[in-house]
Length: 202
Image (cartoon, rainbow, N blue to C red; front, top):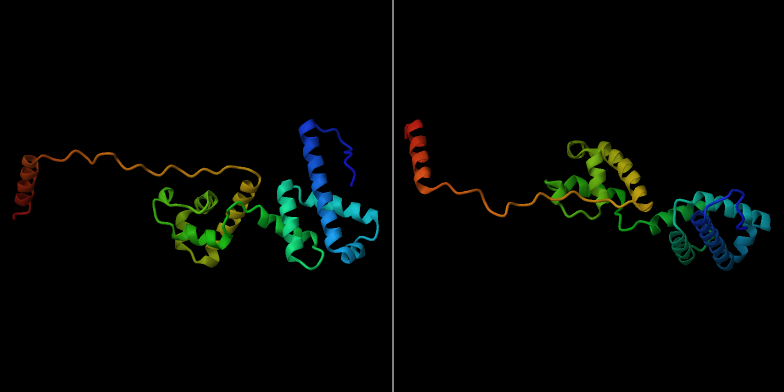
């Protein structure tokens, strides 16, 4: 894969593109060394290799270069066969989880979190935001077969934002007052109690 781009690009964009091209080239070099016979059976000539690299680069563009390289290393350590593009996408998604729990675990956490939600120790802010987007009442009053697909859709969208670098903040938990309310003096309390007794004819 050549590094020449048909369109003009700024210095930062060009550097990023070159880094991505280098990452794809490194990945295919790893695959060629580790899946030698399978690799040359799948890509019999340089034209096929370059076409595959272009496809992979376009399909994997949402992942940063470090994620791509981590995923490729995981693939060659755990797969005996030359990976498909779909296998690589899944490996990249796992490599870029950034502490995100799986969708079902996140759903259970959102359903079981006590109120106030802001005070709960969330495993990841994405779980809170997905629960809020799904509506807490909806999650707690509907069967999993109904609620989970809705939550999963919101959670997937929020996880994608996290993978793209967006920082998610949790709301501030309501602070407890430093002092309790001003206590009623004994005389006032006694008078109120007497008035209450009279009204109740006690």
